Image (tube, rainbow over all chains, first blue to last red; front, side, top):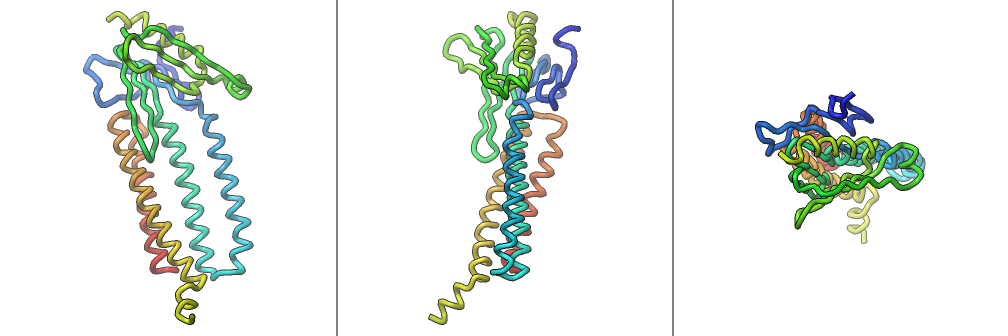
Length: 183
Length: 73
């Protein structure tokens, strides 16, 4: 099977030929690979959500003796909403922190839902080296790691952090470079 | 002293705190919605519509919470 046939893996965090477009896409440009962080990186956010809910549950026993039922109800709704917004922010951050490899360029979108949005573009022809780095026990178990793409000259290097199956992703990027890197 | 006691009852503190925090929450959710709309124009995926819709619903809920803090508490 060719590396560049359509495929989706690990909750759409590593997709070959995904159904994704971007704003400055040229007419003859196709997105060949999209990469997000491994979904397991969201586990701490889900875990803290559960801890928050447990805290709210126990907080009720304390505050229900001090204030009116109406206030207790409001505080509960407020905190539940707060926790849900926190979780939603983490999910959206994960979803939009995406790396796209097209047949012409590499696009690295770094996004924080509250503060910034940074988009780095690099022409495929300027790519000099690809480094895959996997470290730690958890990344070994779940097979995720980081891919660093070094470029020539003063262009900014691209980093794709905690990507699932980094070796496979690097192989796909190498295939893309071989096919489209000189065009 | 009596005036201070009426001003700073537990109930009043919760009411003012609820209003202040829910107002800050409106600012936070609006900022979130604006950022989501902005990034949705940059990267267009099939789920962008749902993400924008949920972010908008969160803005509405935060406004309702603010109103509830003023009128309900």
